[in-house]
Length: 196
View (cartoon, rainbow, N blue to C red):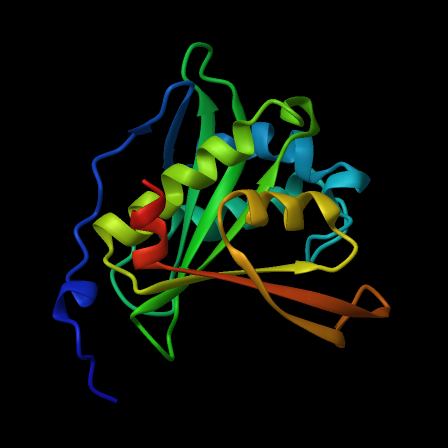
């Protein structure tokens, strides 16, 4: 397969931290284990994640994998960004960008946040910053998001970000002992830039 857009392959990594009005986003590091485990260990947070509530040892392995990819250099990689309050430095979540291995002009967004920031607009602000990076820095043409159909909060966040609900795949994924229905959302670069 040839890649038609060399600017995608040569994506310029943004300077970190990425700053918003209230937040800082930066690559996850080994020192983030305790903060990430504080919410990934909660049953309510883990419910729609691909893993059960994590032990500290589980989170250590997760963070080791995240920290190994602190920038996107080739399709198929994930970039895991820690989301911190700008004033306190408290880590309250993560936003993930995955560079599509099969179509390197596209990517995927994922996110997980502590319930302590629920209803404060933190997830929206962080995901807005991440989508800006995806479209403006990496030059992606399209970003997708996928969530469990029962995950109303994730679906609502993607809608609020301007992502359109494009498909509902009935019982398409086997997860944690049951068939799960998945919702697929998407937004194009031109749509995102028009919103700005």
